Length: 187
Image (cartoon, rainbow, N blue to C red):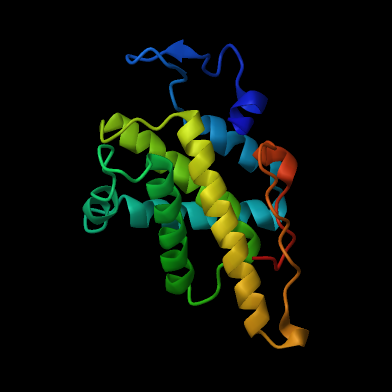
């Protein structure tokens, strides 16, 4: 729950008891999105907004939404965080493909994290499952690690003069806001 520690305050959602006796928080995607967007400036902010807008249109479109959200099965053996993290990776791969390669690499992780948060909030609103900050943090970690790993694989396939700078590896347990945004051209 690293991001929550940094962004949670009395007015932003304090821990509460859930029906099953666990301590959790009412998940609010704005608590994720706000700090990410606050870190960005200039073209990076514009790029992330563009990717988030396109991603939201894709995720919540009438023709794609059922396909995306039918994958959420809280009663199966796959942890919800794994389902969400994998879905976020797949959605970002689709968005990158749809962009024809024009999506800036440095926008992928921040935009994907915001889209993951929005999807988590939607899942809760629709009562498909319960996405807590802990579930979100685990899903975001899976998403970020896979994206970084895919970027490293992609760099190995490029000619040396075309290689982009390497994205920083997310630090487990560190707040997202302290991990920084990958440098331009990364991922």
